[in-house]
Image (cartoon, rainbow, N blue to C red):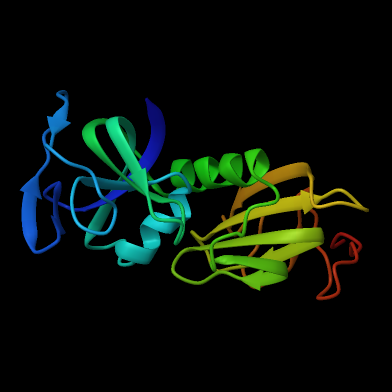
Length: 194
């Protein structure tokens, strides 16, 4: 049994191989076969890979799921297919990004999803995930800024950070570092306002 992530249409339905399946909460949803390219229940080990298939957060929901039974993967991204799936918990954006940070921490040498930017990023679609030696990010009010700081001489993860641009502690359109301190565009900490 694997912990994984799945995107759905808001009604918890999904189309795969031209067939539409209506998932149900609280039970094991079951399929006879699992082949990532053809059939089975598709999900991903990296939560961010769900956005490759369900990018519009206004029309989709994202769940933590359990994948069981026959499990198949294709090596394209972290997508897998399984014959049994149980929906565990719906993830709002902040929880979804915390799970994405956990995945990056546990798998520092895997190729990251294209939404993970190097060293600096401005939020798009409600969030920014930035990874590097001195990561910095900025956004608009309500955006989530997620940080992954690597060790100085390796890709192993040293620290994680997650902040919401609230307009008070974390202000709009200003660069912040992993500690939630304001930084300039080069990542250097700036003096606080008087």
